[in-house]
Length: 336
Ligand code: FAD
Ligand code: EPU
Image 1 (cartoon, rainbow, N blue to C red):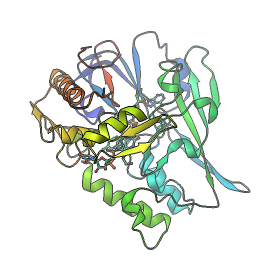
Image 2: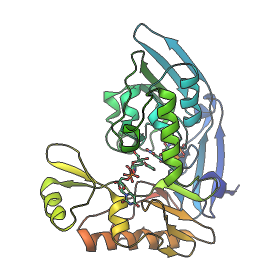
Image 3: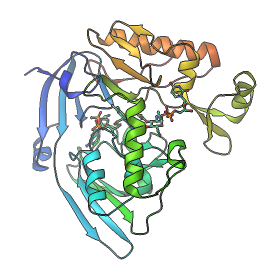
Image 4: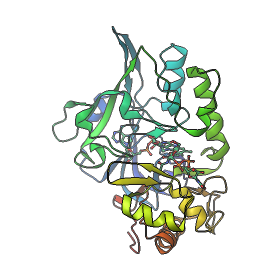
């Protein structure tokens, strides 16, 4: 039976799916046929339904946190449907620091390894011990080590070989007892009293100053990835744009700030129907309402074209886009 998914994704476009199934017990996964188009959903904060989706939406809502004290670390085993930010709060309350830089990232624990969530100098991969998933073909639970997850910047095996094959059920996190604060990000460098609680509070303050609360103003966080360009391209861009924020990625590449590129292309506040480039953070697109998927597609294409014209950089959307039959990608001058 058709079911609205507008309230199930934070960008909140009007859309329906053919069927919505909520998984609260792992046994339910055994009973799923996975024969029709399906998509796994957590809290929908990195997913946009552009139009009606002709498939099943399987929403992960399993709960449970187990903490084990080991010699040198704490092992946390967390069910996929737990809320990420609540987990961060729980660990700090239990005096198990480590996750404070990742405070206030919306969404579920199960989705967190998919794009290897990251913020303020820390990526989740740093703390992953293992990820357990339900293999939809063998119907068995499989455990992957950190290395097997192939984590990268906003990337993991779950976006590639295991895409549409794996339902993440449990995440094993390892928090060393010997806590080492991560203070490399600008506003954190000014902290005087360095405690996990103070880092947590500063991260929340910084985030609230730039990122709109998705439950107040619909959005999906950073819409595009920060592009990775060659050192050579960076050097020629710096001639024209000496202020361009850039960070070392590897020996041959740098990452550059997409928000800066978009702002300097004069797109802050640019609007198509109810969709706008956010005033406080140009990497975020917001939905003021009265918008449909076609408006968002036009906005994505416009931004990609402008950024290409100004800097010869291709922007890739970070957000997962769902069209009628499944996931789609919008690349420069292409439509789904
Ligand atoms: P969903 O949108 O429900 O799913 C995301 C993807 O993961 C989909 O492709 C889905 O199929 C897949 N998936 C979800 N659950 C499972 C599962 N159990 N098994 C297999 N696949 C699954 N991200 C960052 O990295 N850093 C940030 O700082 C950050 N800030 C944000 C700020 C705002 C205001 C918003 C709205 C988003 C932000 N994000 C950020 C993006 C988002 O919070 C993360 O990607 C988060 O992990 C998504 O969780 P979710 O449960 O909402 O995922
Ligand atoms: N900037 C501008 N104008 C803008 C936005 C940014 O000039 O409109 C500049 C900033 O001044 C800064 C640089 O660009 O010099 C980087 O900006 P910021 O620190 O705000 O971070 P970001 O690169 O835009 C990334 C992540 C965020 C994460 C923050 C903090 C990606 C795609 N985004 O954003 O993640 O919270 O760093 O670490 O990597 C998300 O994935 O949804 C997300 C919000």
